Length: 141
Image (cartoon, rainbow, N blue to C red; front, side, top):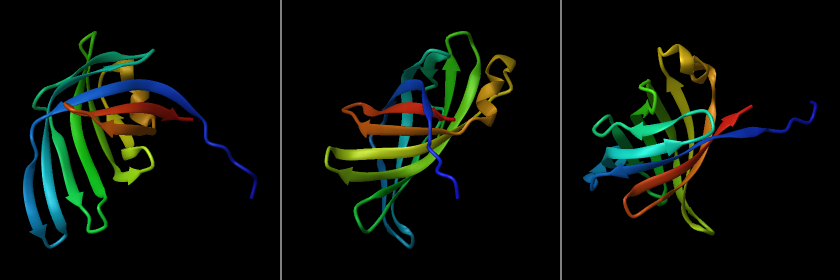
């Protein structure tokens, strides 16, 4: 099999503000936690704007090994008025630098100016902040 290298291009940085978590402990699949999206911003070379407050949240599964399975939906509103659904799953886990977040975002929009996002696979590396989370999002080439 030929050697393959992943290449990425920076898409945007997103800062998401969240509400306090709602806990559902000791469920049959593990503990559950819901964290609502209360707002935020995103900015990159090709798009920028705000995270629509109340447009979604993170439905986390708390695993017995201390990691979290992420399941997020939210709406991005670009500075020129387009709405884009951003969904991602991933894992939150402790690493040498603290608690890290690794996700795989997908996008959906009917806006022709941003239709290129519909066929794009992204990856993101993030961290918890005092107000919520912050991610560096990259287009996987």
